[in-house]
View 1 (tube, rainbow, N blue to C red):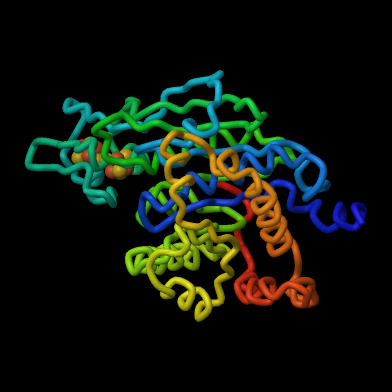
View 2: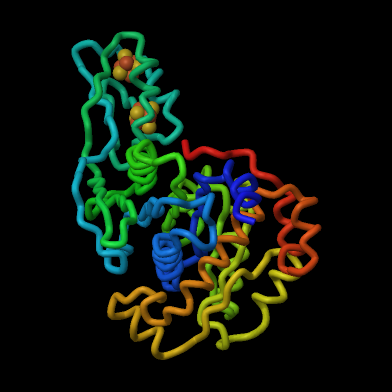
Length: 341
Ligand code: SF4
Ligand code: SF4
């Protein structure tokens, strides 16, 4: 039995699961952290071949990182993060305007005999520097935040980005966080990315390159509205999607109906319960509040790994689990990206 699993899951040892939601406050971090803790605890049973090591957890919610409150890492390394901003040497500049023409973000403008740089709009792409025919542009680093990494008491490798207050762009920090942390990855480690809330650029950057997108929602009209947007993001990026319904029992059946219509598997339901709300507010992971959820998360991971690693024929042959029949509809839109850039 275990030998068969070893063959089946071995190519997916570095499975990358992004946990996102269309908006904040839906329980995204509650799910992501408990998934990580369940993986760290399950050393021998659920995924013996796929996951011999605790996972790598990336808190990509750089504007308001809070996963550390649940996982309690000790940080061992810190590094400033930022982008290179252009600086113009007026003595060399001929005011030809080529730098402004090439900038897609309108972050540099030539007004008569003056070149203006708007650091808040600059993405640090370097195009203006490369384009300037006079070599009048140099670049200087602009620190936007800090990257930190360490280890949690349960052995989870943890990394996060923290954006400085007042900075306008989270995306460069998320990109750098992924570049900084992923090279430390062991070959057989699963990666869990706790994405920014919403559906804008930071979320796209967080989930880009993931093997699976786990969307956390709540069964209300607002939850459904944001879930629709988040599903669009996942489909634009060709990432298979699964749904976790948090606060199950409130609201209506709209989310269920949407998932059924769209062929989205609901992989877990977490009930609306006072004990969970109070525990999470005190910084307790869900699997500490209700230890039986450890097995639920392990089972969910098994389904995700199976869905990502199996061919459509493998899944459809699993008639005992109707969930996989739904899942295969989504997995037929196979991934094209396997690496976090
Ligand atoms: S491209 Fe160079 S020379 Fe031309 S306006 Fe910009 S900085 Fe000046
Ligand atoms: S580095 Fe890129 S984004 Fe910034 S001003 Fe130059 S061209 Fe525009």
